Length: 486
Image (cartoon, rainbow, N blue to C red; front, side, top):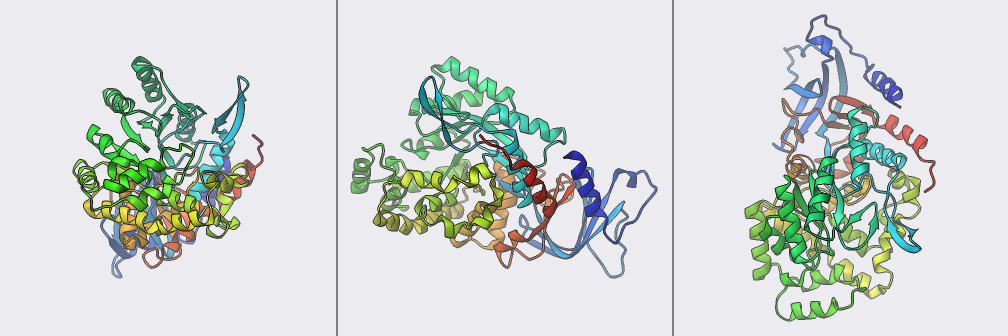
């Protein structure tokens, strides 16, 4: 595959204007991308007739073509033919190395598994890169699989987004390839040390933990020099924020502690049935964002700059679980490996298996309230970013952007969350902008995303760490990875 990618790169750069220079500086493969409109959401700057000089994986110079001035010298000149250049997209919630949810027998008992497979991971890495995502964060995953992906990327063997990751979620429910539940503090320390040794930057705390376990996880992670990200349910976001949690995920802050009065009582009564998943939408029926608990939470998150990825798309997938064919037509699902493509809709429909038509209608009525939460957090200065909670970004990423826009953001603001916001979420200081000294991660589109976010479906070229791929060539490689049975 490495030879194939090299051939594709050479072919993609063999465009009309190619110049050579004998200086030692030029021998380091300086590439000039020019005749484009540069869009930098971090500064909300649109630069017409712009150019980027890339060398050693970095943007070393940026400028605007002047009628009376020549372009900088470079080994290769790439005429982008008046297309649009945007920083590479960042998905801050991508389970890239996970396999499809399925049931396996272990010791004579059925156990849920999400163990992955290298061939599936490589497929999703390619399809994610082909849709313009150059950096991603996996907030949970099999540590060995994530570490293997990082090794293969560093060796230049696997193409895909740069991956920052956590390890197994800490959660009582057993999930093969997904969860671990240490029995005491010493075991927690050992597991955290193991995940760190395999390159994890975060640990992930999950819904089944007690308050004491969440507090212990935050404390032990800090002691180990790792950050914490949490998907919480009955435990309040406020409690986690007070502990100094680094990040929270999902627009499901479904703790009764964030409710008041009769709403709190009614919601607690609903939650007595552990098999009733209607809380996914009913919490929003009860929530009052102007109440004291919610105002305190928003203030705390803003003051502490707790990072949040709401994955609005997940709420929509649950609420519209019986309408996914229209929301996500089959022709858009090429991003999924066939092992996922055949079952993802059924997986998304599982929580609502017993919902009535009235339940779905009520759930769908809550989506604007979910978006109101997003806008409240954004307006308060809580650092948000764009995530999908999928194994590949594709149409889910675009939909997350669209839901953010209809929540009340401008296209500039949405694209800022997708680029510089994602970099800030992950602590990356040299990614997410078109600026000198930054990583040469950018995408080339045929239409302007400031006019319509659907322009992200027109990505034609992806440049990551200075390496260029044509999207059609990335897609062509998927067929070689599609044939596998789990």
